[in-house]
Length: 251
Image 1 (cartoon, rainbow, N blue to C red):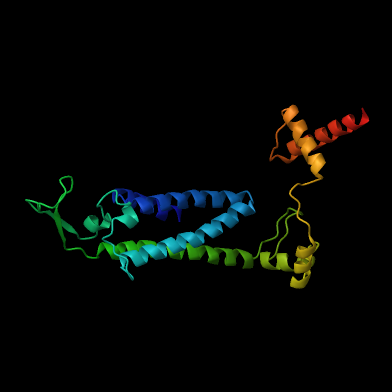
Image 2: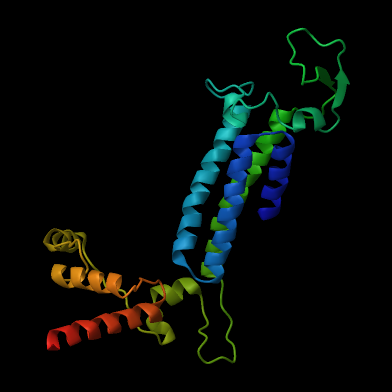
């Protein structure tokens, strides 16, 4: 997938297609974050990647509709892909398979001075169909990831010499963990019970008592203490604040 996106990024750069360039760049970043989240088991990264795939597929569907001029869309518009910054078209317009480019001299009086006026002929495939094929490939690759997930969940993990490593099918291991000697932490809950709990819950603006919260904030400001995402550092902060409050109450 990354190779196909990089190839598309290069082609869009050559064609000065600024909107696709920005979108492809975002896609590359999200793919890297998605791989990182998968390797490091970061559910938020994986969830964000899955949400981005929906946006990515929607964008490619739009590109297909744009080049096929579905509805009121027109591929002659400079606003959609180049933000009106240039009059460039797809790189494949001049460099498609079999295309012959012939400069026309002298150019018309209405042609911009910094642009050449050319005639294109002999193309084996029109550039709009090549762009549609590129976008269709990206949609197929995005859908292929769902097949990868399905294959992973239903394949069989082989046994190893490691006694802590479980073996079996991931789907069954998750749904029926007791068959593999693991406790089942799933608990059924009806929608009615969830709605009652939601109504009865009192959501606070502070994680603890208001006075304790303000006291801890003042102590952190006075002693230049900061919050941290590290579990050990935040535990040390809690112990220190608790000790400081206890010492203050004992005085």
